[in-house]
Amino acid sequence: MRYFSNLFIMFTSLFFCVDTLANLMITPTRVSLAERDRTTKVYIINTSNETKTYRLIWTEKLAKSEGGYVNHDGLLPTSLSPMMRMSPSQVTLKAGEKQVVKLAVRKPKGLKSQEYRSHLLFQALPNQSPATEKELGINLNMVLSYSIPVILKYGSDLPKVSISDVKVTKDKVSLNFNHTGDFSAFGDVVVYFNSKNSSKPQRIGLIAGYSIYPELTSLNTTLKFLDGFRVTEPGDITVKYMGKEEYKKILFAEKTISVDSLL
Image 1 (cartoon, rainbow, N blue to C red):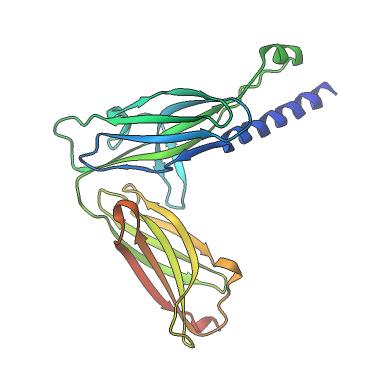
Image 2: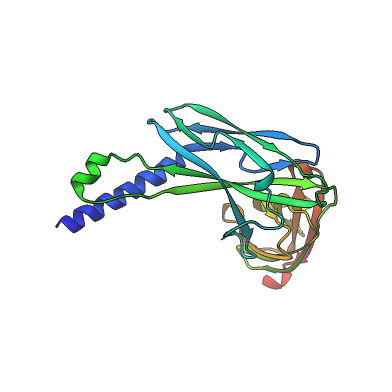
């Protein structure tokens, strides 16, 4: 009986850890520094109704071709963290309280022209009562985290991106991005349907804020069509990868294919 009681407590604590992390608002969720930038700020807000504590640390991650990241132990040749200074590194915020996290970059002489990146990790520390833990005879030490990429673009080369292997079904499209260069691409992936019975394209798919990092030469993705859209008439599907933020107004790649064969 005590086992199930402790198990319930563990799941309850895990729920509260998830809630703790969900109640931290972070902006921006991606930081990009240009060659001449020296400082920037990240804003965090405790949107819960109780006091929370967060630890901030640097971590190294590599992007995966199917999406997401894998953690990397130790530094990479492209790690940004050795050049960064952060203040504060741990914060305790009351309900509704805000905090500015200041980031400063110190670029060494002779820095190679390329992109550098590390990830700023926000660890939500659980609120635990030592007396309660002792009384229950269980030690809960669960820490959940969320990270944002922090990027330094040291140089001005544009990444080259192309689209291949586009496959369309009635309710989704899958494709492959091909990437070359020492800098990442960032933008929105937008899918349009061009009906043969209409001159106005209809937006049917979107991935906002899509990154392709330098370590990837190929990246696979699938977009399910918006609002239950299904291909039911002749026309063309157009996929565009459109830059945003520092890449605003840049069209990285575009591909159009006919969907007549689906009908």
